[in-house]
Amino acid sequence: MKVLLVDDSATILSVYTDLLQKHGYEVLPASTASEALEIAKEHQPEIGIIDYAMPDGNGDELIHKLHQNPRTQGMVCAMHSQHPEVVDKALTAGAIELISKDDSFERFILRINAMKRLVGAWVLQREMNDLVLPNSHDDAFRILFVDDSATIREVYYSLLTTHGYEVILAEDKHSALKLAQQTRPQLAILDYYLPDGTGVELARELRTLEGAGDPLTLIYTSRSESKSLKGTGLDVLYKEDSDEMIVHRLDSIKRYVLAEGQMIHASRLTALGEMSSMIAHEINQPMMVISTILDRIRRLGSKPDFSPEQLSKPLDQAASAVVKANEIIRHMRSYSYQDNEIPSNRWFEPLPAIEHGLQFFHSICQQQGVELEINIDNENAAPLDIWGEERQLEQLITNLINNALHAIEERTKKQPQPNGKIWVHFTMETPPTLTIQDNGAGMDEEQRLRCMEPFYTTKNIGDGTGLGLFIAKGIVRRFQAALTFDSQKDLGTTAIIRFKSDTPSA
Image 1 (cartoon, rainbow, N blue to C red):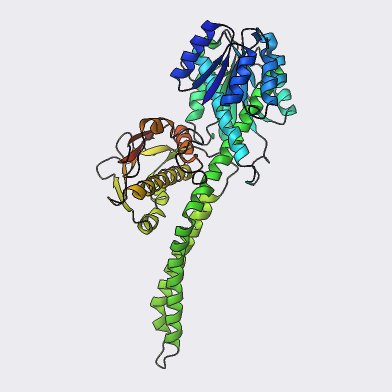
Image 2 (cartoon, rainbow, N blue to C red):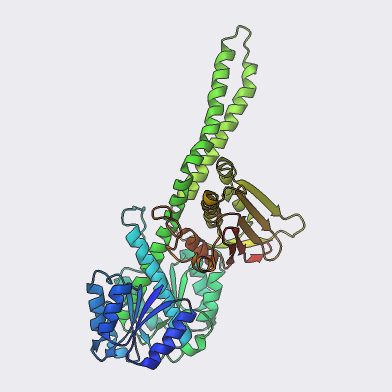
């Protein structure tokens, strides 16, 4: 992802360019507003980090010009300044926030990463303008606000409800955890100091609390206290920020969360669309069985020695075929259904979900001439539950196997032999590990490093959305698992998911 970095200090440009490049960003440096505008029009970066005071104009003026130009109007910009008083000008010009030059490098990168996620969400919304999804904005966006000060709770309750948010208030960790299970908020804003612990501790407990919905979390603290958050990986909402800036940030987070939910649902529909002809074949098989049996029953009924007992076996066969067709339809309906509730992580036994996720692929692989080898290794291991959610595990498997099928198809166009093959291996050893391997086209090192970026695809235009592995990455993150890829060009790819595990509850 390209970042336009604008500052008239050569030292600051050098330091932050190195920092961003180390974290995988392509940096476009500029030392003046006019230079920045020309670079932006030519290279169309997704993100802009812009100093306020420059020799030929102020940063808010540059942001306004960028958003007025058709080639750069989609940029997500932030003001980078040590002067908090310029925040109103920055927001008025279209910046999403002010990043302080006093922030640590770690905090700076956290904010840039948040902007990157926002870019993905906004691009998705533009891509999905014609896709109508049910009730995605009908329910209020729920925020759990935790602070031991009754005054602060009431102030923010009034502020946030005025801007359309549903706010759940809690004064300590204990009540917050209980309310999170009852209300499943999309976002939690946590004071750092609480009577029975810290906001950091509460954030960690929310991530592993069954039924809480794994909300995004922000620590509500002062700039002077934020140093104690170093290394936690948590983002911050500063107490010194204006009400306008706080609401602006929360609105950005809301857009991201809602767009992410739409994206996941759209990916499921895309996967079903890709498999539709093969699923139709699956449904056609039991329908043909039923048709054959009905014809047989008609012939039996025309015989002079017909007896009702002769119908028992064919009726049982017809009933079995109906059950099979109904199961296929039920699976499709369950997979494509968009639940307005946030998927709630919990401990669950993974084998049924894995088997369900693989259900269609036996015949799909057979139709495409691809061998599917499945090995579930759980004979010598104690049963373990994994942390996550069943339907999202099914989607994870679907996305990875669809990706493998596409890779095999791409490779066989150039190299028909060997025949395509996909290996699926799951072991219950600690940690439980799911491996999906193919002998498809494989990836070079650049493709491997970028394969989970949103909208990145090596397919021809119209053949792929570039969302499959990005969504897989998001599912794995919510599962607190790890997803890695080993790949060699023209030889194949291995996806390895290592799950968080625990023994089942008694």
